[in-house]
Image (cartoon, rainbow, N blue to C red; front, side, top):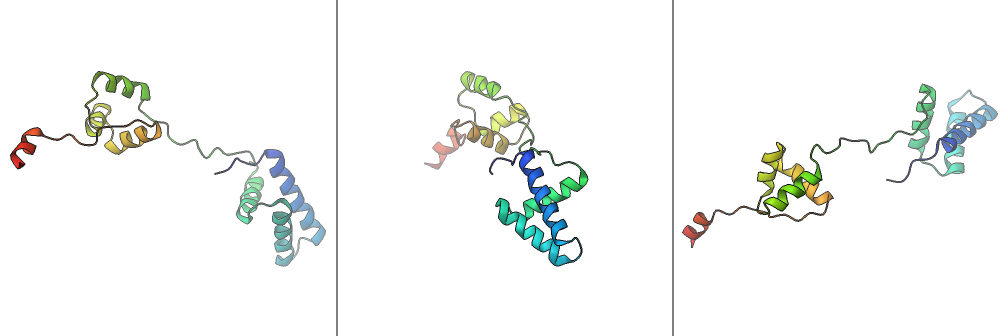
Length: 131
């Protein structure tokens, strides 16, 4: 996903849309469509982007919305690094149990931080019995 457009740019686009709409005359669906087409071609933005900005402008909030403000990790990566320094033979499931989370949470945390890990904890008694 690219960077968000600046507030000035969004306001400029809304102003151009409204100006074109007034020039064409507010009545009639064709004039609205022509104003939309004119604006998106002039500024090189997507139709849905313009619709979103028009809706947000009508609501009075054209400011940037941070879409990447999702949940932060409940687990501190430094705690995991310390745990792995003290006990490097832990599996994902064992680490997940210690932090009271699912093993996939640990998997994606490791992936995001480029940490390699042991995949399975083999029971040596069962392995010798199979031979």
